Length: 299
Ligand SMILES: NC(=O)c1ccc[n+]([C@@H]2O[C@H](COP(=O)([O-])OP(=O)(O)OC[C@H]3O[C@@H](n4cnc5c(N)ncnc54)[C@H](OP(=O)(O)O)[C@@H]3O)[C@@H](O)[C@H]2O)c1
Image 1 (cartoon, rainbow, N blue to C red):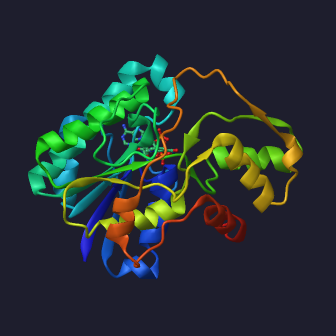
Image 2: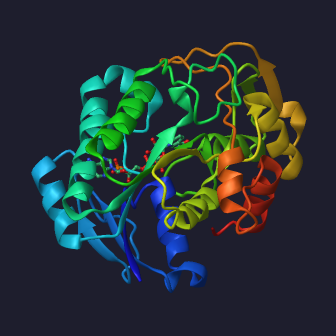
């Protein structure tokens, strides 16, 4: 059995990891330990250890004590627009916090799976592969890219998983897709931009992909996103279609003012991921992900 420490376990992706790691497909392989700044949502049967990743000494000490085989680091300052105003906070969490966890892993020879973002690219071309050079446009993306570098510089075993536009049911915060569904359900008209393309990723699907990648023993960057590339307007139309809401409520717009600059086409190429997973596990596209949500409202 391998010990897996999930840091950021109350969060959106963290909570999905906690859910799936207890599932019979994985529970015979992994012993989960959940961690976050506080225990808000962790089921009683899962061991919880408090870690504030901005505290270097305590982070290293706690990781050493837990002695996991693998650490999955999902904790981050994830509000892209807020990162523009709260640069120090973003720096402390996404760069120094990431480095602190990596240093903890180094002490005990543990592997890290780090979650990064499609926003590391400038979005001028799309369909980015892992060999292409990042050029982050906003502060959030700059801190995540620097976090990637701090991990590789420590010399530990790592997998850097770049993901995008996470969606799925999560009671504590809306994501782009649950925000759309909520508005359509209430009959609200919504304006959605046409010129921002990403690869939306079902958080449930990503959580299971990460659990499959624990056994991947090559240190590398892997693009881990949904098997699709769509603009925000197309995403909204698919939501309406699959959940049987009126598409007339969705108005395409060209421009939407946001604090942080977004890359225009940050879609990611997932050929490497598909090759690694082979026929062991399927990466879902948006139709499949939305149908999953429709069928499993409790997951
Ligand atoms: N969500 C997306 O669409 C998206 C897209 C691309 C990449 N990613 C990356 O994927 C990862 C997971 O994203 P997510 O949306 O699941 O994140 P999330 O829901 O914001 O979860 C992050 C968790 O980390 C915790 N945390 C905050 N500060 C901490 C600290 N100092 N020490 C320990 N834990 C701390 C948060 O607690 P509080 O809530 O109490 O602050 C929260 O529980 C992130 O690394 C993100 O950069 C996400």
